[in-house]
Length: 420
Ligand SMILES: [Zn+2]
Image (tube, rainbow, N blue to C red):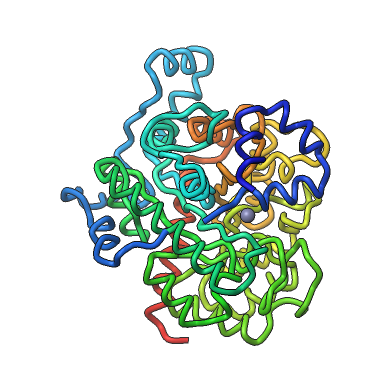
C-alpha cells in the first residue's frame, strides 16, 4: 500500500499513468494512502502540558480564533504578493492571525511505514506536510489520521496497527517538543497556537479498529483519539461504508451504542467514508455535533465520498462540520482541478449549510494528487486570499479556517460532561 503512494508522490507523471483516473484506482488509492501510535499516558500528558504562560484572551469576540499572527512567508514573496494585489496585505494578516485547523492528514502512515520525519522541511513531491511547512503555511493544528486499512478487519491486528501509529506519532512529537505538541482539546490547541507551536490531534480511521467494543473505544480515547471515522472503505459489523454494499442500512444497534459511547468519551463521530444511511443514523443518535473530516460537496462532484445538499442541511441542524477534502478526484470529476475549485466546494457548503459548518480537511499525505496551486501545506494562505476575494468577511474566514473546528471540538468535550 505504501509503495504506490510514494511513487505517486515522487513521480506525478508516472502516478497519472498508473492511476489513470479510474474510479477504482482513485478509490483504492485513497484507501491505499492511509496507514496508522500509542504512548505511555504519562508521556502523553507531558506532551499536552501547556507551554509558557499565554496571555489571556482579549475582549475581541473573535479572540478565541486567533493566535499570535506572525507572517512567516519569505519577505521577498510577501512583497511580490502585496505589490500585485492589494488584498494580499489583508489576507496575510487574517491568515496568520487565524488558528488554522486541518481535519485530516495521513502523515502518521508515512511516519510508521517509511520512517518519515516531520522535523525537517521536505519537497512537496516527497510529502505534503511537515513542521516547517506547517509553520510557513500558517497551519496551527492538524488531525493526524490513525489509519487502519479495512482489510485488517475487526480483530487484534487492526487494534495493534492503530496503537503502533499512535506510538510513532507521539514519539516524533516528543522529539520536536519545542515546536509541536500532542493535543486533545480545543483549549490545548489555542494555548499551543498562542505560543507559536503546532498542535497535533489524533483521529482513528476507521471504526473497525474498535472491535465493536465500547471498552476499546474508551481505551483509544485514553490514548488521545478525538474522532473516530466510523468506517473506511468497507462496511463492517456495525456500520455501512459509502463505497461498499450495505449490510445494515446504516448503523446497527451496536453502532448506535458506539456513537453514544463516543459522545460520552468526548470523541467526535467522523462521518467521512460512511454511507448516506449511516450518516443519517449517526445524526439521529449523536447528542454532540458530528464532523466529516475530509469530504467535499456532491452537488459539484458526484462521488459517494462527498456530501449531498440535504446532508449539508442536516449537518447545519446538528451544528456539525464538513471539512472540505482537497483530493483532486473529490474536487473535480473529469478535469484537473485548481485551488479555485476547492474554493467552489467551500463556497457551496457555506451557502447550503452556513459558514459555521465548513472547514478544511486536506487529506494531505493520503492522496496522490492535489489541485494546482494547493500542492502542500505552505499553500494555505492562498485559500484565505481566495475567500476574501470572494467577499467572505474576516470573521467568516476565521470560522472556516479553524474557528468552526474548535467549536465542534469544544461541543464534543461538553457533551462528555453531560450524561446522555
Ligand atoms: Zn479517508
